[in-house]
Image (cartoon, rainbow, N blue to C red; front, top):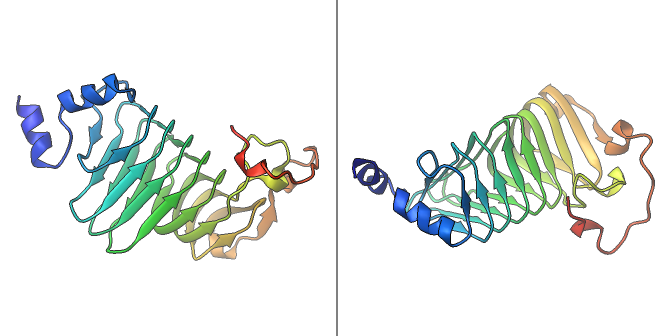
Length: 215
């Protein structure tokens, strides 16, 4: 079939290979619109919505853990010796998202229970810890967000760090419970506590398993 020939020529799985993944437990809602590189490694129970693209060239690496939801408009590409590692239970691409590592040694690392929504562009090098969020049309590069509890944790002081708004975020490091609400240059925006946006939230003692709180 011509579609499969074209996919194979570009290092992508054929429709039949996607159906084999579906039979093994990956949820692929429309195998004709999903493009998945043959070198991409997937864990168990991932959900790939229509229009998801994950590419990985022969010089690069791309690995996803388990139970991730990749929504329509998600584009992930590792090329030129770059590396992308995504953990478990993440929700990526509500409103679109791009994640790219395109140079030798450049890496994007995304932990567990993160949320990327409303068209962010993540460009290596980037490290997003557990529970972190990037919300909005934000281009993030050379950013390190400290991991914490998931966004559903009742105490915002324990949640992973957050970028929200729109614009360019470059060279930022945020700690647990911090947020930057940017509008243009994130470097000129203040670093705030997430509690500022959730003043009625309870203040809870830090628990040893706070970072593992599920969404």
